[in-house]
Length: 491
Ligand code: UN1
Image 1 (cartoon, protein in one colour):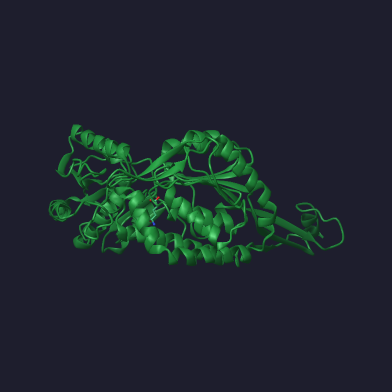
Image 2 (image 1 turned 90 degrees about the horizontal axis):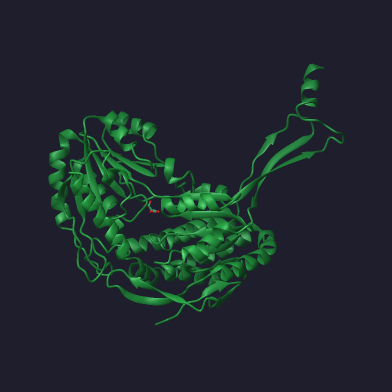
């Protein structure tokens, strides 16, 4: 079995721990490679390399940095099929979605390469004569990126591309369930010509690698996507750093009585069971108008019955495995919780084929908004149906959770749609489409306990740079803001 290395200062090296861990294919539990169990010393070396390379990288013209990102985007495209198969193998999502994952990485590198010729600042008039005011974007310095396993190429790209175009250097820790996908992304950056030390990759355990990155004084920003518990740990331990957190969701699709139910059903299946429910944006609640509840339940169960569970490389598979044993236990424990809470199990609720970490697509109905299955993030193929009397109640139920990432409403009534846009508490709202499928050139992120981070799109630039304010006084005399400007008005 192949043994993979850490990437520090442009070289692939062993960890000083001399220990490795395995990454498994979740569809058959077979190992796909050996990876370095990085530790504090490795992170320290990575930080030193990132520090050494910072001066040269931040002084490289941004359009030149952009050329490397564009090349990375081309190389990802060239390797799309191979990488997508790897995403399926290491993470489990079906091949069509795995291609989408890689495409999201391609698009992200392409988008941010263009930002190298923008990175706009602003100019604005001064309150004084012969004085010029403007802002410019400057790098933060060394940034620490910690990514989850559910989008093993796309989310690293979301964080790497804006970090790099803004002139930062990077210490990157990928999730231990998908180290190989991360290594492949870094290999592509290496091939695209990223200078030594600008990007450093450390695989390994959270308590050694993650914690050291989070606490490190020389790392000036942390960007983290993952669980709420870890997000809280980041906040408590990062010290005075820029911190960006994306901590999940309990996203709802609202279906009104005037909706196209067939369209809504497709959106629910795609948003709830796509990626086996393992997206931060997954639709895990369906808030349905009571008038159409019975009819929708029937359609929903019929369609769910036909979904084929299996290895994602098989083109006939609709739903792949969960990521690992713990995820399987967690998802099943929520089925038990739902039953205890007296929600009605319509379909599923059991483990699938035990060769891998499979779980049946599961639907609960007659769910009350305050039940745990309707409040907590399950991160699996479990959907809760909650019935409501009108839009006001639907929005109230939608907002009754602590998260606020994505949301959706199916309606053919324009005022329902606009009221939902105005009143739903979430970072993203879709009208007549599911809760998933964000595009890379728009801001992505949530409100409330999802964290107020925005990445991707123009927000990625704001997140991974600092704004510097510049005043140029060419009057040749001492001019005092707030004082002379008021005096000259009086004259
Ligand atoms: C995530 O689940 O953390 O909008 C990211 C979507 C994808 C990204 C999801 N483009 O569902």
